[in-house]
Amino acid sequence: RKIHSAMTDVVIPIAPSSKNGRDEARSRKKKSDKQAPSSNGSGVHSDGGESRAQRLAVRRKRVANARARKKTGWGNMISVFLMACGIFAIYALTCMVFFRSLSGKSGSTVSKIRGLIKKDQIENPPVPSGIPIGIWPVSIRDEDGNFEEIKHPGYEDGHVTMTVPRFWADDPVAIHENKLMSRERALSIGTCVTVDPKTGTYTRGDACPVSERTIFVAIASYRDWQCRDTVTSIFSAAAHPDRIRVAVVDQIIAGEDGSCDAPHSPCSEDPSQPICKYKSQIDVYQMDAQLAVGPVFARHVGHRLYRGEYYAMQSDAHVTFTRGWDGDIIAQIEATGDEMAVLSTYLTDIEGSIDPNTGLSLRHTRPIMCNTEYEGGQQGKHLRHLAQPECMPLIKGMPQLQPYWAAGFSFSRGHFVATTPYDQYQPMIFQGEEMSITLRGFTIGYDFFAPEKSVCFHSYAKGANEAARNKVPHFWENSGRYEGTGIKAMKRLLGIVHMNPEVNPSEWNHSEEEKYGLGGARTTTKFYETFGIDVVKKTTERHLCQFVRNKMHDMFMPHLRPDGIGIDYSEIDFKWKDPRPNDP
Image (cartoon, rainbow, N blue to C red; front, side, top):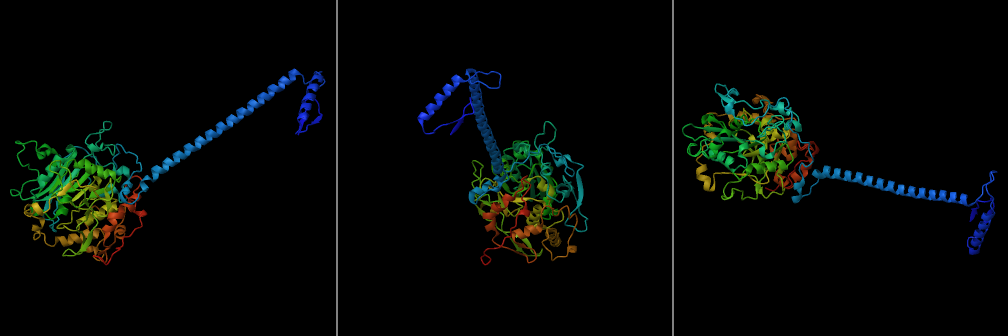
């Protein structure tokens, strides 16, 4: 090694491994220090005590600066590391939130597949064009000038007319605009029991507290003595009866049949009866039974009674509800995360279904709509629902997706009634209405679900109720009066939903077809291909229930749009084919 002396330019060799050599070097350096001259101004500098002290100070300063730079370097590295960790954590959290609704496994974990992607809350949405302003409380009794004359559909010459309430929204197309509704537009429909203190409006969007969201209940009754018991059950079993409005189309023979809003005892004697207590929330449109032409027209009139409520329910006139049914069914529909969800099913029989002491359901099974087949008859071949399987739900914590809608029970957002009203021109139709509403609703963007648990039960003409129910008349006692009208009506029903391509369109009535027609969000072709329906051959791919009960929800729910406005079927490439074509 070599070192340079600060005193002279002499290079002093040092033996690296010799201790004596090192001692000798130190000795030489000490001697040189003693002999070093002072600074004499000639440019030669001494290496005396003052100069050594200065060099020591400089050296210490350099060491201190080096240590400081080392500490600063470590600090910068730690800061960069922490910043990188923070960025990664934010990225991971974003991925978890985004993909949460797209994950799911078979079995009970499928319950996690729902609309959990966060949606912006729309508070007090502006009322778009074509959508009326909702108010509460509301009744058609306060609308003397809001009625109109229509031709009775059972008389082609139009010589019989009826005075009926006007629709709350006269033009359904003005609401859905022949395309998928925006979330803001959908939430501009639906009243709250209380007004917003800032704006004074009853339409508060999803900012309306769940317990204050209004419910419209439509019932079509034909000479049914149980109708008033159904109305009584609706109010008495509800957790929040003050937010419910019942609208009944009561087809009776005056003086022979009891009215649906008539209590068992006069209200003056027992004002605590629900029909008396909530009389202001019950609207009854009474109609001569001889003018009855089936459930489609009766329910058409019922939809005319809707007045902008947040939710809409359809029920038969001989149904009993469980305690707290309103909160229960709302919790179920909200669990889907789907603004376009419609909960619908064939109801289970009342016998053995409700605990008489608690008023709660004793059932752990529920029907699911998946079984339909073509049938013939005078009105031509059409699809009708068969018996539906009732089983334990495989999906836990929310309703289960299904392809079909049922008329006996339906629960949805109010805009379903406003955008998909029953057709005015379909007299004497009993079978076929459910496929019509299914397809019209599907093309507007609605999705159908089987409730996870039943909130009401049906009185069928069997068992203990057989004798009493068999005494109730049916609308087809008027068949002779309206003979032949059902055949033409069925051609219209099938024509609108593109199920009878073999029939010349000139053979059926096209009146107000756009109003009672299809939407523009999806096509009927997509529905037929997805669920195995051949409208030309009039056949179905059977055993669809196998797919619906076990796989449909799991496969389709991940395609629910992030804003909750329905399932995006354009992302679904599935066509049901019967895996067991030779089996019954």
